[in-house]
Image (cartoon, rainbow, N blue to C red; front, side):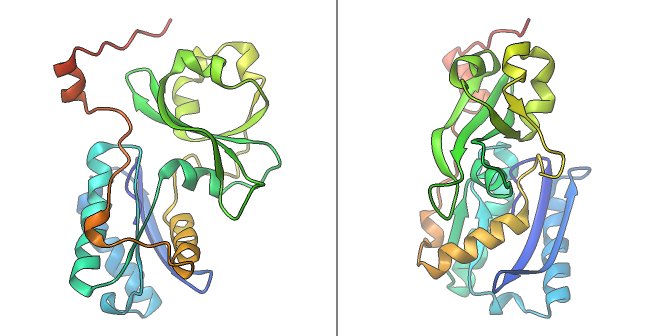
Length: 229
């Protein structure tokens, strides 16, 4: 279950195959459609909820409210059915869906002229390996962090591309075949691999990856974000 960004989705995975998946951009809130997606995917897969071996949820970063939708569902199912939980961050999910020899830059819109950022090497192991991040940075700081050619995924690029200097954009390569949203099927495929390696947690050990403070906390601390020019 992945609900950390505008695209919310559910997938059922078995033996490296996607048995069913449903997703939609947030025309309604994720909480209104998640249960329907879950039931539809289970029906298509001919699986009962109690027969699921492992539950997986997106950890964030992304929408504070969105992260909690999948997290609450996953934690509840894990507790009720006494099944393990796998959590994977959304920056990793974006990079994991990519095929390239270049480093991969995942950038998610963090609003207020900021992005959640992860720079990954895809060639150091079975999962994307962090080179930089995870972090939340002002858009203006991207030029000082990224000094090499990268393949860029994530909605942060389309959101802020007009503010990026031309020399930086020349380093940013894009490929339309790769999603700018973390996908539930990518989460499920990675989670199944982790579960086979016993890389799971108990339901009460889940910690969301918020990275930056909430808007209320930023206001309370007097944090000011500089406008883009």
